[in-house]
Image (cartoon, rainbow, N blue to C red; front, top):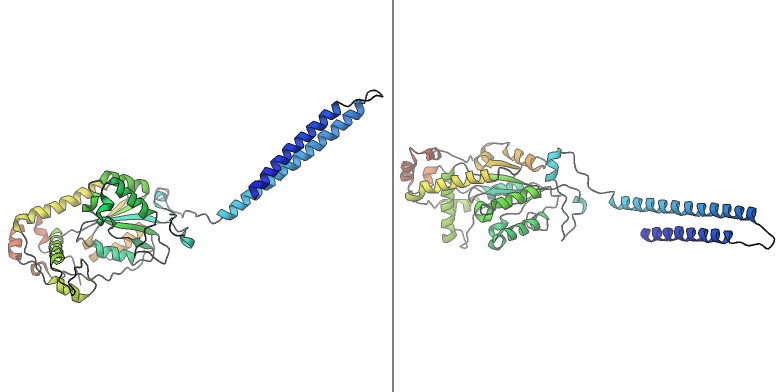
Length: 362
C-alpha cells in the first residue's frame, strides 16, 4: 500500500509538470487581433509558473511524507531487531542469531547463541560431561551426530551436517524450553574429525564456533574403560541382554564393574602411546580455533572447572548435575585381572605415573 502511494505521487508530479509546460506553450502562442498582449501574457506566464511551482512543491512534500511514512512503517516492523549485547569486539563474531526453517524461535529470537563443539575420545568422560552441560537450561549439546557414518562420508557431507546443526534445525532431546544460548555437539576424534581437520578448523573459525577439547590425563584408566565397554558390547551383561555405555543406577554400575579385563602386555605401551599421540596431535591442529582445554580429572577435582566452561560458553554460571553413575570407582589394582603384570610392565617407564593415579572421588 505504501509503495503504491509513492508511485501515485510520482505520477502526480509528472502530470503537474506536463500541465504547466502545456500552459506555458499556450501562453506564448496566444494571438490577438487587437494588437500586442505582452503584459497580459507575462502576467499569465507568471501565474502559471507560480502554480507549477506550487504543484511541484506539494508533490515533493507528499513524496517526502510518504517516504517518512514508509520508514516509520519499517521501523515499526523492525523495532525489535536484536541488539548485540555489550561484549568485547573480538568476541562478537561468536554471537549468532539463528533463524531456523522448521520453527520460530519466538521470544528467543533476540537471545544470542554461541556455537560450540566438544572434541574428545571415547571413554574420556565426554558423555558425563555433556549431560552436565545439558542440565543447564540455556545449553543444548546434541550428542555424537557423526557417529552416523553417512554424515561423515566426506568433507561435503560433514559441512552440510554442520550447517543444518548450527541453523538450529536439529531437534533432539537436548532441546530446551528456555532460550538456548549455547548450541553444539560432541565429536570423537575417530569420527572423521582428524582426517578432515584443516577444512573443519577453517569452517569452525568461519562459522564462529568455539571448541572444548576434553581429554583424560590417565590414559591407562581410559584404556581399561575401553576394554570393559568393548566386552559389554558382546556380552550384554545387563538385564534384558542390552548394552549400555553409560548407566543411571548404582545397581547397573555394579554389574558392569564386575568384569575385569586382562590386558595384552604386548600392546599395552603402544596403545597408551597412540592415545597420547592422538591427544597431542588434536591439541596442535585445533590450536588456531577459539578453544579451551579441559581434562576429565579437572572436572572431578576442581570445583571451579564447570564454572570456567560456562563462562567460556557465555551462559549464566550455575550448579550443573548429571544422572550418570560412574562404573569403575575402585582402585586400579581391583580393575584389572593381570594387574601385577601391568604394574611391572609400566614401572620404570614414563607411564608409571598412571599406576597410582586415582581420578575419581566419591
